[in-house]
Image (tube, rainbow, N blue to C red; front, side, top):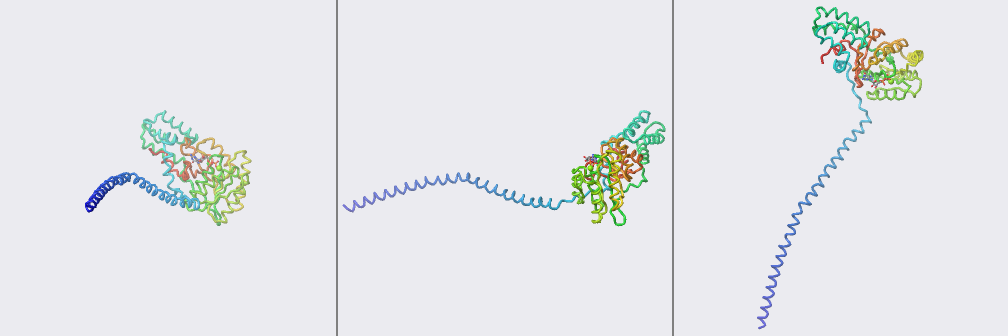
Length: 393
Ligand SMILES: Nc1nc2c(ncn2[C@@H]2O[C@H](COP(=O)(O)OP(=O)(O)O)[C@@H](O)[C@H]2O)c(=O)[nH]1
Ligand SMILES: [Mg+2]
């Protein structure tokens, strides 16, 4: 009997165990989905880690970028990049558009003659008016009109090509093609050449000197600039900026100091450094003729204790026309002007001043300013000038 009790108990144990296993399996199976569910959300965390490395990657890249550029930026002020000025020979070609009819009223007036169907009285009157308003001057205007009428108005009809040819020839005659327009920038006896730049305030002296320094550097001359306009500190700063762009030394003095002593120091520095040229900026105060004469005379005298002045450039603002011419006369009486710089010829309606100023002062135009850009100063070449004026653009 006991045996059967034992067997029954065993059977019960077995059944309980079996049930436990089945239930256990079920719970194992039912607990399996949670991992499955965990797998499912895994993609969610997955994107999370993904963005983490993503920004992490650009970050070092960004760090690397400034790290790479920073030394370059630091290097720039440490060793200022010297600009390479444009060769003077190619400038008029580049700048000729600024003189052409589309930009220049003087050229537009001349081309008006070429486009006239008939060279009747009205066409000649129009041309004469244009030439007078361009400040060519009464004498040169008469000469030009007379010559053109002689050559062109045979039968009253207009041949634009012939008119262009004749106009070119006659304009060149007025400008003068056999004049020495070279700048005297070389000294003798081992001394530097000295260029004194004079003119009324605002005509463009300092800008011209900055541009001229670039012309000289482009021609492999060594240069020192003298900031002898001590009237305003800004003038010396302005010159300094131009000089440092092309590695040219600027000698300056205290604001309100003696301009002659700054000029003297600069020429002395030029001699010590054995440079080729010293260019001297001056103030252009037209207070009284006597005052101007005193100031410029003194500057010149003091410089010449060290080295002769080889060139005196008078800067005239082309937009001021007759007025500029009147001022130029005063300067020419005070110093021996050896060359004219006509600034602001870009867009000036007074292009005729080129002829008038040479006639008036008997001094050649040597340089022309054709814009505010650093290389917008060109040697004056009559052929290139006339071609630019008469260009079809
Ligand atoms: N459009 C044009 N402006 C010029 C030219 N030359 C000088 N200027 C401008 O004329 C102004 C006066 O020049 P600045 O050199 O200070 O005259 P300064 O008082 O005689 O020394 C400045 O704004 C220059 O940029 C030129 O050839 N063309
Ligand atoms: Mg100035």
